[in-house]
Amino acid sequence: MADVIERTSPVPYYEQLYDILKRRILDGAFHLGERLPSEHELCREFGLSRATVRQTLSVLEADGYAHRVARRGVFASTPEPPSGWIVQDTEGFLESQIRHGRTGIETSVVEAGYLDPPSHVAMALRLANGERVFAIERVRSLDGSIAIFSTNWFPNDSGRVIADDPEVLAGTGSVNSALRNAGFVTNGAQRVIHALHPPAHVAKHLGVGTDEPVLRIRSLSWDQSNRKFDYYETWVLTDVVPLEVNVAAG
Image (cartoon, rainbow, N blue to C red; front, side, top):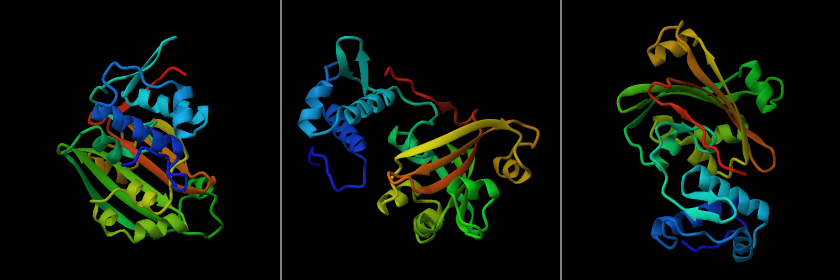
């Protein structure tokens, strides 16, 4: 792969630069502990703004491929194996786990089809009155233990992408990859986490009681044009998959 920024690609510049720098670290072009080029040097090499370069370096730090030393710079490093789901990633659970080398993930699609959305979903996606969504419910297991029950709701354009993807509907494909390949690239997201007693149908799929607290994540994703294209609600058994938040110095 060429170490250049594709200006016509739907993938944000900071993600492209992240892939380039990560690949250089993994390939040994930057040895572990070696100082990475400065922000100014990276801006000049790739023709990017300092804000974009800073965003890239922050993500590299968050993922463990770099660490910052005050007044000295940013240095290449090796990430620690994750124990859970890093919730500030733009990736979903599946992609996050695969990228960090975890296997043993199985997905079962419970239901998929067009329906009238709940009111909070319609409001978040800014749907017109009477507009339907494509929804998919899935149960995910890790190493044989049920870990997650999730529901995604998609408005018309992104909904057609998922409805027409046989691998996603079979539980073998990635929702995020299908959306990205169709031009729906996450530019931002908002996630809200609560510990709640699960509704009966969620508790049934997770194999827990309705009186047991479960972490619920509600997430809304949008692209560079502020188009809302995915709203999901995920219930996580954190004794199987703990949630992680990586903090990097600004």
